[in-house]
Amino acid sequence: MTAIVGFPRFLAFSVGRALQGIRRNALMSLAAIATMVLMLLLLAGFWLLQAGLVAGVAYVEEKVEIVADLRDVPGAEAALTVEAQVLAADVAALPEVREVRYVSKDEALARFRERLRERGQTDLTGYLDRNPLPASLEVALVDPREYQPVVDLLSSREEIVDDVVEVQRLVERLTSVTDVLRTGGFVVLALVGLVVLFIIVNTIRLAVVARREEIEIMRLVGASDAFIRWPFIFEGAFVGLLGAALSLGVLALLAPPVGDLMYGFFRVLPLELGALARDVVLLVIGTGLGVGVLGSWISVRSYLAR
Amino acid sequence: MTTAPPFSPATDPAPGPAPVQGAGSAARPVLALRGIGKTYPNGKVALRDVDLVLGEGEFVFLVGPSGAGKSTLLRLLIRDELPSAGELFVDGRDLARVPHRKVPELRRKIGIVFQDYKLLPTRTVRENVAFALEVTGTPRGRIRPAVDRALAVVGLGAAADQLPTTLSGGEQQRTAIARALVHEPRLIIADEPTGNLDPLISWEIIQLLLRINELGVTVLMATHNADVVTSLRRRVVALEEGRIVRDGVGGYHRED
Image (tube, rainbow over all chains, first blue to last red; front, side):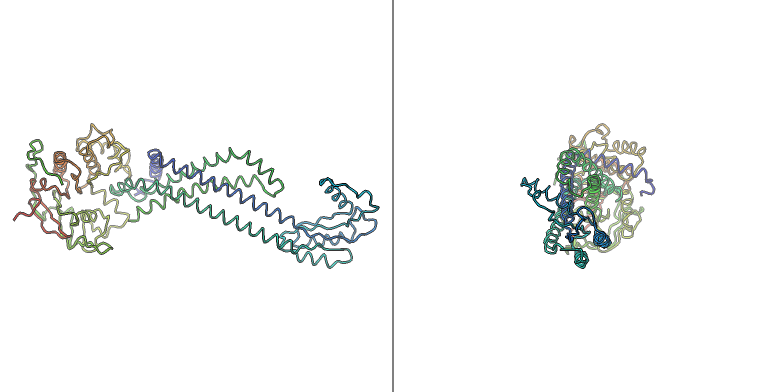
C-alpha cells in the first residue's frame, strides 16, 4: 500500500491529517495539551526537587571528615612538619580519600576566633599565653561509609597523631538518613512519573475513543492499517511537542525567580544549574513526545487488532 | 418498520425493464458462500450451513427477523468477522486466504451503507465522500472528479458543500451511498438503509439503489421493509435462526 503510494506522499498525508485532526477536534486536543502541560510541569517540578535533594544529601555527606589532631611540635605554629607532610601524602594516596587539608595551629586559632565572633561571644583567647589548639589533618572522603582504612592509617602513626576524632557513629547515623532520603526521593519521582504516564496516555486514549466512528469508517472504506494509525501517531507527537513547548515556556517564565531561590538556597550545594536546566529540557521534550506517541499507538491499536 | 404509502405514483416501484434474475444466476458470481457457519466465542450460533451465490448485476433482498443472522452475514462479507465453517468467495477470492494486510483492498471493492449513515458530522458532503478516497491513498488529482461523479449519481451535486447535520435523513443516506460508490465497487451491501427513513424517502433510496444496480453494480440489501420487498418482486433470501429458509423471487413473507 504505502509502497505503491510512495513514502513522501504517505508522510505528507499523515502529517496533514494529523494537523487536521487537531484542528477539527479542537476541544479534545486542547484538553489533551492542557493535561500534558500540567503533567509535564508536575514531572519537571519533582525532577528539580529530586535534583536538589540528591545534591543536598551529597553536600551533607561531603561534610563528613576524619579529623586527626597532631601532636604539638614546638616552633611549628604555622608550617607543616616533614613527618606530617609524609603522613598527609600517605593518606592522600588512599583510594578512599578525596582531599587532605592541613590546618596549622595558627589557622585553627583563627577559625576558633572567627566562630566566636559569629556567635557574638567575647574573645578571651588574647589572654592565653600560648595557642592551646592542635594542628590537624582534615581528610575528606570519597564515600563517607569507607572511613575505616583512613582511621586505621592515621591511628597507626601515634608518634605524630595525638587523636583521631571518632566518626563511626556519626557516619552510620548520617548515611542511614541520607540513604532513606535518596531512595525516598527516587521512589516518589518514579511514582510521579508513572502517574504522569498513565494520565497522559489515558487522556490521549479519550481523544482517540471520541473518534472511533471515524476509525470505523476508515476501516469500512478500506483504509489500510498504516493509513489509520500514522495520522493518530503524528497527532499524538504534535500534542506532545506542543505540550512540551508550552511547559518549557512556563518553566522559562518561572526560571528567574525559582533560579534565584534555588541559587540562594543551594549556593552551597554541588548543583550545576546549567546541566540541570539541560536535563529538564530533555526530560520535558522526551516525555511529551514519547508519551504522546505511545498513547496514540496504544489507543489506535485496540481498533486495528480485529 | 415502515409501511409504504397506499399510493405512490411519483415513485412507482415497478421494476420496469430491469432484467429479472433468478437464484443462482449463471453470470460470474460476485459472491459465493458454501456451507458457511458462524458460532461466536460465547457459544451463540449465528449462522448454520448457509449456501448463497450472487451473480454479477443481481439485486437481492436479505430478509428475516431481528437476530436471524443478517448482520452477521454482512459482517462476514467484509471480513469484519471470520466464518467458523465453510467457504466464502468475494469476487472470486477465498476470504479465508486473504492475508490481513490485503483486507483493506478487498473492502474497497465493496461499498457499504448503514441504517445510521455513519457520516462524519464535521465534514461537508463532498468531504465525507472524498474521505473514502483520501484515507486509501488515492492521488489528489483523481479524487475531485470521482467525488463529483458519485455525487451526480445520487443527485447531491447542489448540496456538496453542506454539512450532514443540515441535511434530511434521505440526503444523508444518499451521501453515504455516494461514499459507497466512490471506489466504483462491484458490490454494494446495504444494511437496513431505509430503517431510519419515512416511507416516501425510503422509496427514493430504493429507486437510487435500483438505478445503481442498472449501472451493473450488484446490490445486497438487508431490510425489514416488507412493502418494498413485496412490491419489487426481486430475488429474496430469507434467514431464520441462522439458516436460509427461502431463496427466490417473491415477496417479504412466504407465499404459499
